[in-house]
Length: 213
Ligand SMILES: *Cc1c(COP(=O)(O)O)cnc(C)c1O
Image 1: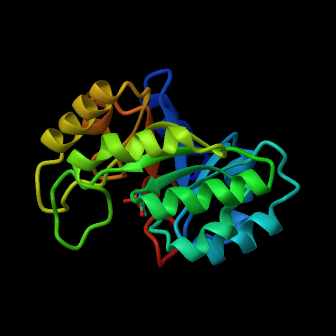
Image 2: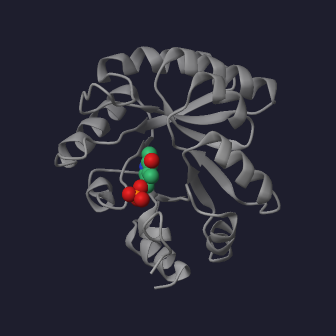
C-alpha cells in the first residue's frame, strides 16, 4: 500500500469528528510532504530538536498543524512556541508554567492535553489521576495555554480498554472536550471508548527504522 492509500484507509475507518494525527517521528521531511500532498494536515512529533528542524524545512506547507506528543523537559518548552499548535504531554506544574510563559511571549496560545498516567506506572510520564484537577486549574489560569483534553498511553502489556475508559470518565468529571488516545495497535479500541484524537505512526508511515512496505 502507498502512503496515500494508508492515510485514506485510516481516515475512512475513523468516525467523523475524530482527528487523525500522523506521527512522523524519525520520518524525513519528504515523507511528511508526501502525506500532506495526500491531504493529511495534522502531524505529531516526539523530539523537540528533530521537530524544529523539520518544521523549518516544511514551513511552506501553510495548513500543516503540528502536535508535540513526546516527553518534554521543562527547558525545551521554549523550542515549541509558537509553532506547535497542540502539546499532548503536559503533566506537571513547572512545564505548564514554562509553556505558558513561552507561548504568551510569542503572542500565541498552545492547545494542551494533560497527560495522565492511567496505569500508575512508576517510570511513566503523566500526572496521577488524582492530580489532574489541580493541574487543570493551574493551566486554565495561565494565559498562553488552552487546556482542551486529556491524553494517555496505557501500560503496554495490559488490555488498554479499561484505561481508555478511565481517562474518558476523568475527562467528563473535569469538563473537558477532547481525548487523545489510541496508537497503531489499539486505536480501534480507543475510538470505541471515545477518542477524539488518535495518534498513528506505523499504521501510516510503516514500521520505523525501515521503509514502508
Ligand atoms: C510513537 C508514538 C505514537 C505512534 O505510535 P505507533 O505505534 O507507531 O502508531 C503515538 N503516541 C505517542 C506518544 C508516541 O510516542
